[in-house]
Image (cartoon, rainbow, N blue to C red):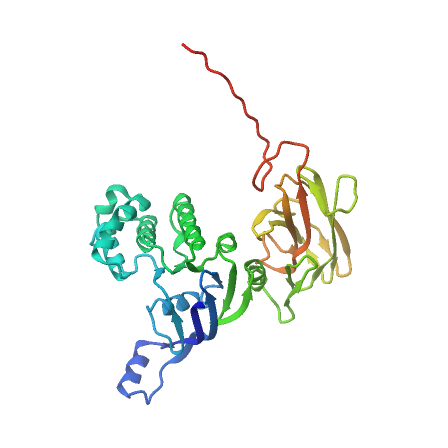
Length: 411
């Protein structure tokens, strides 16, 4: 059974050019229309199953926060309806529901009361909130002396003092120190393992891929993509690049069962890509620590000056492992005319852990594809890392390591 059901949900706001237009509309009882309707969300239908983790991504103004505010009852929809089952804990705007003149402890008590906890339950949970937040003496000081990171510590600790059936997080983890962010992620993972449904809004692709088993992409209030996090994030990555009217985003199923995304204006085009071992033989299996050469051929369909050619390695979950490009490597660029072809070779030592990895290849301008993207090809090939001759290890990075054990003399 679905924990969250959304049917044709929409939220409309009135936008007035000035305060006098609002007053004129009010005085005339609506006979004078002084506003323009702006839909923050429109015709959204969605189901989230119990225990599912859903990442919600999109550019600023796409409707992400509006959706979460509707689901938490902070605002009411203009059209459509939704249903949710179970106790909900939400982290939206930092400080929402808090009072700056009350202490952290008092605000924590109020947050628990608003979550529906009884007095005895709150008293039983306060030590855990104090321990998890690690605010120390600040817990009994007014909230107005808190930094944003300290407010996040208090808000998260209070909201998650009891495991909710549904947890909603909207960018709150983007503030504060990395230590506490990792602590929050561990608690969210623990909740997931115990059946909590998660709605997670973030601009951090790694966090979405790590925490979510499904993602949706919102754009201008509409749902435009729903699927596996890596496929949706690749589509979003292509969406935010500058485009002309002839640009398109293509997604196709690969022979290894993944969704590959390709986008760009086509002014430059990747014709071929291959991986070779140290002997120059094409292969898709490498030993840990072995050198590899990535060969690609590119054709220019327009005159381009100083293009950047880059590679990006991702693990099986789609997390970025390593990336570089000719801009970062400070390779002097050249000018190419339409019809010219070039061959580019990247050589790198694959100090990677065992498992499957994918390669992304791109031709763009400047430091990143956000300036101009001519061809961006995600998951253009996949290869496998197998154990080498050196000592075994765990993780993604094969770092050189030594250990020394020495007996101490008894005095």
